[in-house]
Figure (cartoon, rainbow, N blue to C red):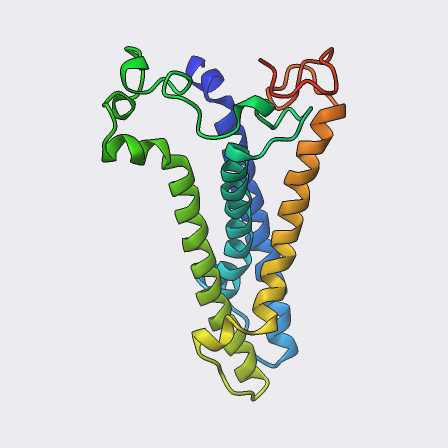
Length: 224
């Protein structure tokens, strides 16, 4: 029970993710087979749909936009501030901060990660940017996966209508691809931007994403 309490946030969202993914697959399978029947094509089994490009595209086009949002937000909050926002550093703390503030090298303590302790070097530089690197890698892989599965699904639809298929390069220049991509990007940018502004004036007691309820509107930074 202690393990569950200590990891409740990741468990909660992990369960929600799996439930939503299962729901998406069931609804998507039904919609896919309806589309197949409308074009006098054979319906697919549920397991065949799970391995199809249609399902892969629908899933990955949302993943890549989410990780792009986090990637840009992590990078932007290093150098940019929003006075009064609980999602921002204080105005005087712009930049990568000192080794003392970041608990690096001689300022690391006994419980610091091992790669934070050395005096400079590749390992510490890698670890110092590891969150941005991993988020960026997931974004690139998800975006590429979306483009590959999207092309396959696009070509399947082209064949159903007796139209010519396209190469990967041609597909990533298609309006269809960028419409699907940008409609996800704009919603993510809107969400993270409004979150930064809402935390100036609005509060949620007990949440680390909010300032203390009694904090002034121009107080910048999180609950601490």
